[in-house]
Length: 300
Image (cartoon, rainbow, N blue to C red; front, side, top):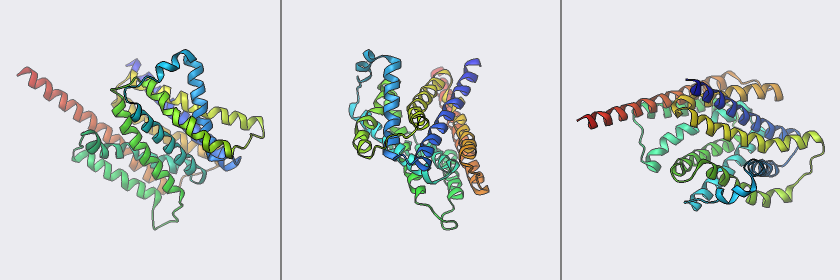
């Protein structure tokens, strides 16, 4: 039980760091005029330098040893793509809107798990997926309210992140977590430089330097805590607390930008969150049922 409580605390802290990352990126882009390419590149470069400093340069060659190089590079490219789309979206949308759309990712992964991983969902989980999409329609309200093009960036970010999670699951049985974590930065560091350097705008104050330097630390420590949380407790116990990020994003959006969610965003977000929690519950039930059936077969 203490490990499970610790895992929940680490999960809540991890998603809060992710919320701080999005808030910092939004402030740098919308308030300080820093180009998105620069923000994305510094985010990946900062995390890569942080990992190198903590683990030591001598360990880097081991982190580059992978059994699936092509799949690691695909995952890294997806990581960069979802980050770019997300940072574009947060420049124009409220933080609670972008995170509500992002919460569709676990539902999309459940829908894609059949064709990609052979893990087909039952009718209960299929209903949860449909209800989750209805929740997002409540948030966006297409045709009823003005549809900002940034919503397309948020949806694209979510869709790419879903594929990212599918690839991550495929790699989980192949390479160690630290190897996968390090490879996720490579495309962002090297390919990102091609776009960031020509657009580079030097920070004009110590505060701006501080915000830029925080990007890598927030992303890096957030992912480290997330991995550690899943090591301490079963995924079914900690996954529902991913939705704590909705509270932290909404709070930061209000404190930093003065954004107040409208009632439709609150209702739609609640529908998505409840659908996600129900999906986790059904996956836990399915796992218990399959384990029980296996034990009964062994008993015979």
